[in-house]
Length: 270
Image (cartoon, rainbow, N blue to C red; front, side):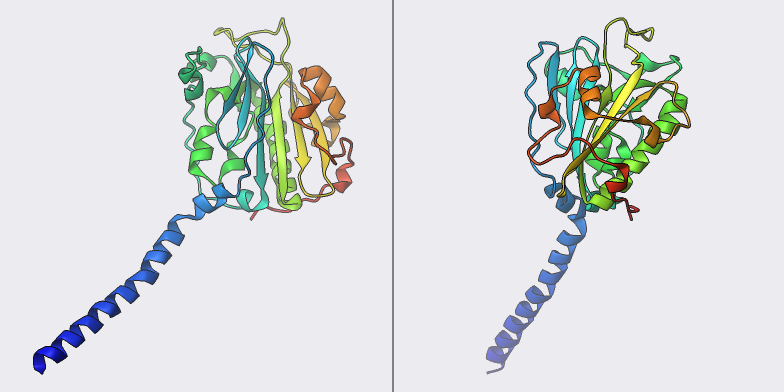
């Protein structure tokens, strides 16, 4: 009888242990999956076909780069980001600039951080690291050298940075935006000692993905320092012509290509 009662208590003890461990396991998975949850919210990117023989598409999952082998610079960098992602501060900025591993896989010449050394120009992010703070992986990837272009320090650290800050406010106000950025490439540009061309101008196009969809476009130049983003608004067609880009990179059904600055909602990213 005693043996029988002992066996019953033993089974109850085992059952009790198993039920108390399950919630702990679930909580542990939830606490570790914040970054993964945000990453899953990213929609599959539409790949833009590249027909020019000098162009190669580099898909870094969180953003795409239309890279120009001739100029060794991006023609465009494109990504979509949400309010929830912009409000998440998971990642830390490590400032580790690296050659693009996707170029290495394609056996193409890479750009290194040394190509900018003692040039007097910053390694200017086209897709800013701060837009990807929801993921350490994504933040680290923004430091591939194919995401960089030579920018004067007073542009990169002032006027251009202020525009990036403003775009994040729109992202948090409009809930979801697509951003397309790049240097305006052309022949006969001055170059760094390494041969990397120095663009005179840079563009940024912001697409509001929440109805009513709209677009706003900007072109900055290397001499911009304290200029307001309101002074650099241009029509999308001017970006298309100067940067030699096709409309299908930007325009989808139902998107207005001209919008007033007053139409854009902004909010702090918390």
